Image (spheres, rainbow, N blue to C red):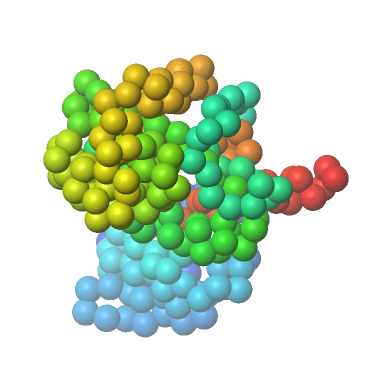
Length: 267
């Protein structure tokens, strides 16, 4: 990236221009307040200290002006999250595992697969922030639905069934966490071991694991996924607003805040 078209030494004014233009044109869009505070010259780069909408950000620019790296900047602004504008008339079974306030302004529905690496990454990291900041505070009701992709994840279906068996004994979320913490160990023996570790009634768990009735619950979720046009995992619906992939926490937070504002506006 070399918008000035020259390879000689850049002036502070050049650096400010490159920084401002790059942020505006490629990252955050035009409707933001950008203030250059300081420019420092190091061996191979220029370090620019700036503020974006009042937030301190550091940017690194190579001395030829070709490479630019912003640091500490949340690029998932309203401009970016607005791409998740598709709303789907989503339906799901009433017995689906749920966390949070029944009267929350926002409902998040996740379609997930226990062998999906991106689902696991989300479950082990960003989900905990969402739980602390939105579910535990009563702002979000969170619903888990199964979408095991059997063609590429042969153990995902039985893991989903096992989690439903745990749900029947009131331990879905604890079991769910164990599955994502042990994604490479999902044999039937492993599934029984996790149930035992959670002190589940093993006779009931084992009979549930082989029950057609439990399988039918997972199949209902798969049907819901197909009806909603879900193509992969994880897929989320934030008040029926579709978001594909394991997006960073900042994306979730922005969408949730958007939906809270929308509900309050219309009430």
